[in-house]
Length: 253
Ligand code: MG
Ligand code: MG
Image (cartoon, rainbow, N blue to C red; front, top):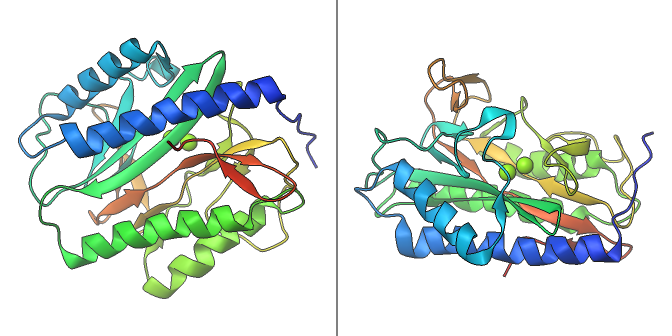
């Protein structure tokens, strides 16, 4: 078993503040800015402007060379979508935003997915159920629970719908770095894996598809991850503080 160092009170407070700003930018983009007809590159520009105003730093920009402040993954793109001038958001699309903030030297990470205009009933259900699987996972989190408990909570809820659960990517510890231990898969056995301790901060992020769980990375941009079968994907993520009593969501307003 790995030994994890709990975050200090000051570090947690920095993450709480950064998490609030991150939740604000995601909600602002969703409610006020993202509409049919705009390119995904514009969304990156809005994100950078918001961060400048709030005096926080985008963590994704430059991370292993990532060229933007935010990931925008449309329809069959699951994660790591690179904002660009070619992708125009359309009515009926589902859009996933994934973003990270550095504030007072601490990092938080969060993602949301939503529909543009009228979306199909099956897309609506995919969004609703993926979000619900994140809430199910959050409910089992407390000191003494395991990473397997989190994976099991997602998998045991999602399985009934026949959806694909992405296995090649997972949740993770977060705080000093964007990706810290432990790894938190979206499947697993209750009681298995790493034990969570009070003061640990983790990003939990189910990635669910209407079809295949197999994915590939775009050969041109070398980032965007798509479903093999072209099926729609949804992604929700929160940064969570593990406590003795349960979970505190840090990436909320
Ligand atoms: Mg993320
Ligand atoms: Mg993450």
